[in-house]
Each structure stands twice: as structure tokens, then as C-alpha cells.
Image (tube, rainbow, N blue to C red):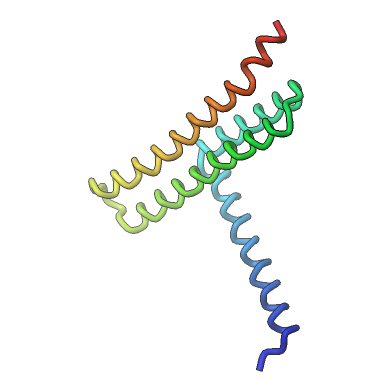
Length: 129
């Protein structure tokens, strides 16, 4: 019989391991995916601009969401690509289609993030001149 303290300890250990796996995924993403490094640099630039232009809390929340979406789509696309390459090392039309759709998701999220950034930053940049 599992007593509540053992169950709680097991949950904490599983949670700890889950975070470890997720951090390993981030490490893999940043070290192996050029596009993820580009997204990281873009996010750093956007954060610096937000600090410099003193954007509002609402604008920070919106930017946080779109930056997170781009990274989430990039992570999912990378997972899809890696799984597709493992399942089918040879070129196949169906696998190409899946990979193209994943890449389209990343592109769509990046375009939305760029448009959001322009809406937030462009008026502030124009006011500087």
C-alpha cells in the first residue's frame, strides 16, 4: 500500500525528471537548430527594444505570447522533422508534405510575431524622430 507521503515524493521525482527532459529538449533545439538560434536572437532584440522603448504591461504580455508561440511552433516542427527522419530516412512525398506543413506553421507564427512587433514598435520608433 502506498502511503500519501510516498505518493507525493514520487510525484515530485516525476516532475523533476519531466523538467529535466524539457530542458534537454531546449538544449537540443538551441544547439542543433539554426532557426531556433535566429528566433532566440530576434527575441533578445525585441526584449531589448521593449526595455528601451518602455512598452506597456499589455504590450509585454502580447510580445511574450507571440514569442512563446514562435518557439512552441519551432519546437513542434523540430520534433516532427526528427521523427519523420527517423521513421523514413529516404525521401518520400508524404514525409515531405508533413515537414512542409510543420515549417509552414513556424513561418505563420513568425509572420504574426513580426506584424505584432510592428504594431507595437513602429509608432514608438516614429515618435523618436
